[in-house]
Image (cartoon, rainbow, N blue to C red; front, side, top):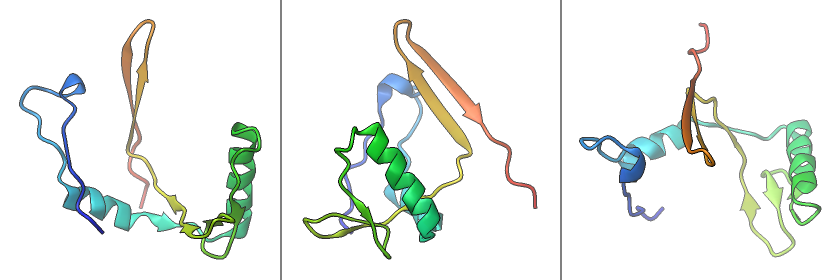
Length: 103
């Protein structure tokens, strides 16, 4: 995988903040659980087809999602620890934090 250009968005960052490096970000992606359960994938496909008025043209495959043009789109499940919401008119920035799962 090519290493991406990483940049901190100073509009939403403290003056002394630093961008999260790609290795840390990649570790979080690697720790995510891959979804292979057909029932879950069917439900997700239906939801996205509805959201995109039928323009979402991917089908469920053994790999995740596929398209007639070829290739596979793997689906991952990530449990959030924090969700950031940005609103406008008026501008707002809301943070939702989730407790860690109980052991």
